[in-house]
Length: 120
Length: 110
Image (cartoon, rainbow over all chains, first blue to last red; front, side):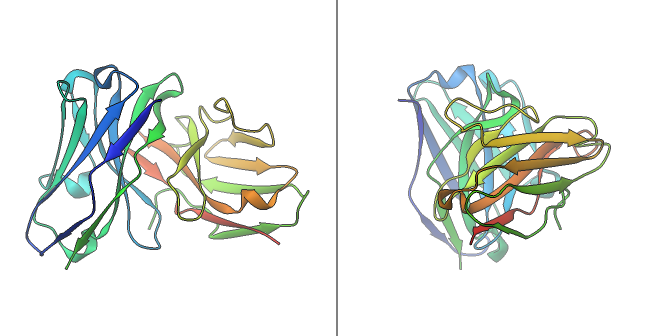
């Protein structure tokens, strides 16, 4: 069964960092990209960026440049997203999703269950 | 303020056909394919439409997508109560070098 399983909820102080993990199973993580999308409480979806196959390239949303890092560890089939200098408006559910499947380079076909990050 | 513009809400009665619009610009919808996601209450987003008008396996053919110029639409025919959800459009933006989302449309089945 193809799935992405994310790490648990986090509560952080302003200025701290958070690292969310996303473990892939049922497929080869290295064969696809991973994107990260966040959703503030009661709000819409916001694309944060993605990391392409074999860590060849990362592309981050302009508003997060300098604060976010995405990486993958093929040995553990796990993707990571670290967000630094946290602010209250970073409070959101953070999703990882698979990208680059047969549905196209920009379609996110498998999603993790989400990780709630609270900054307070 | 989302780059792609969607109406905040839409509604219909069971069996009806409803459409949800998504307005963008030349750098996103005008140049690239459109993706639609469905997010049922309290759940993770689900890929609904890709490449503007294609359905992943398992998505009923009641859902269809289209595009004209810099606007796209999601149509749902034979509306069912389980279609009540938030719907998001998305596309790659050539100027921003980013995936951009619409603000989402909350569909209510009356």
